[in-house]
Amino acid sequence: MPLPYNKRLKAVARELRKNMTDAERFLWQKVRRKQLKGHQFYRQKNIGDFIVDFYCPSAKLVIEIDGSQHFTKNGRLKDKARDQYLEGLGLKVLRFSDRDVFKKTEGVLERILEDL
Image (cartoon, rainbow, N blue to C red; front, side, top):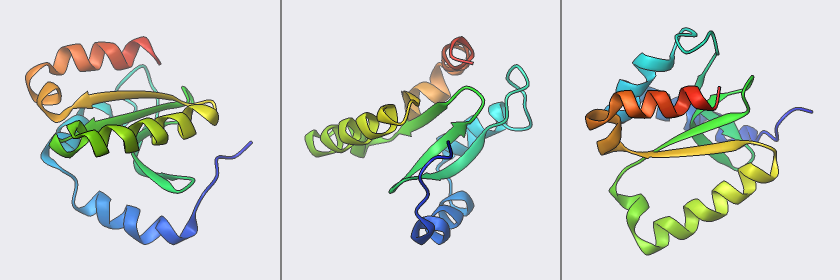
């Protein structure tokens, strides 16, 4: 069954792909072109009313890179609701801080590999 898709977010997703954060760009270089166990990843993927940072359809895996706004009370509440929605679609959500992407890259990649 295909994932829900909100066509109104298509232009927003395209803009986000053009303007990725440094952490997103860095991780994209590690997961693109089937570098992890031959799995295809997509960036800034539209799923329902959300745009996820990275999505691997074969593993039903969503990867989110969280900047400082995600660590506020409001940010945590929004992320929890978003994660529950995505998990309700049968997806697994992994979250990493942008700091971990840069400082603990190998650990982040190992954690992703565990779920592929």
